Length: 146
Image 1 (cartoon, rainbow, N blue to C red):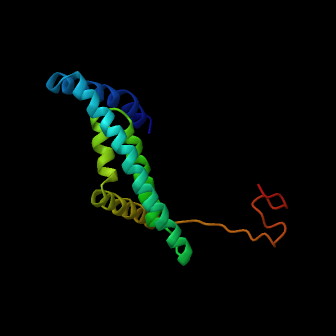
Image 2: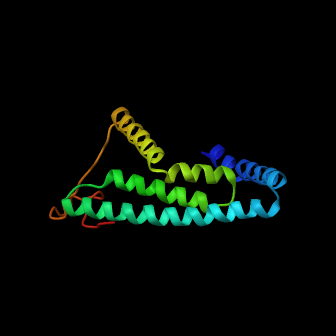
Image 3: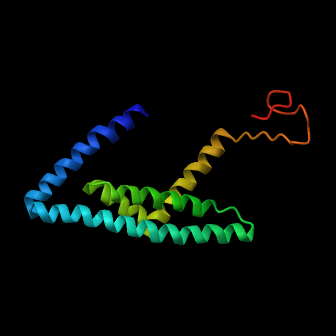
């Protein structure tokens, strides 16, 4: 986990900066700035529209009495894609576009679903439920609920 944090906060910004410098050399400074600003604006717009669409799908699933797990993971991908598009840089923009584009997002959500299913299958799932009407059945053995 520490390696991933070091990678995200040191190596990735340096790569982003190098790519932006090279883009500026290739197409000019102002066009490169406009590309960064344009992807940020487009990311905010697409995240907003996709977010509203998914929000309404979540509400529809809840009204039907279904758990909107698929829509929630989709919403997380849209949120992360919007954040990545708003952040300046070409690598983050590419990753953000992949997360906002519905076919690639569906693929990622399916991969996440398979990974979670494999994790639950190999490690098991332990869930303990305490009914509020059973005094003294709480995790501490007394009436405290915290």
